[in-house]
Length: 195
Image 1: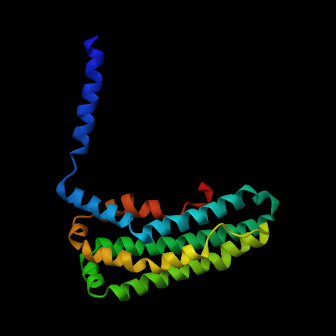
Image 2 (image 1 turned 45 degrees about the horizontal axis):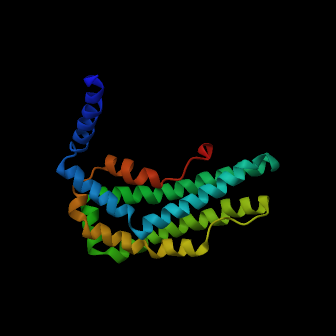
Image 3 (image 1 turned 180 degrees about the vertical axis):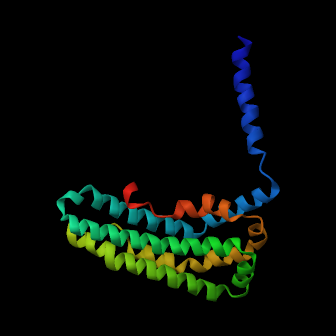
């Protein structure tokens, strides 16, 4: 009978011990990831991403109602849009993991913000002008996305860059692999097949 009381105690000890195996550099890296995830840019990017995925998932539910050729065009536009958004995320990952680039960002945050905004604008415009437009034409209904949210996304880039600048010491502890798994990957659009 005492055996059954020891099992929860052992599990508790094992669970609390597992949480303490994180090294000081790993804790600093996680603090940076947590701070990045709380920026208005990341919160709005997640909302925008969810809006795109919702629109595509809704389209996919009724794709059998449309000519196969048009569905393939929507898929092609979506895949190309996803590649553009991924390129933006890849840039963030590369720049945040590179100590020299972080110094450059700290020295010229407005220039870097404009660069990110340009890349983000190109990705959003490509999605809107191609994938979203074709889905709306075929389904004869408007997208679930709010244009004010898109503008808020553009406006919040500078806050993300300012965080890079203020947390540069924490960024020194981060690896590209950790950044990819804990920050970048959750921001990536789902593949067409996953919808």
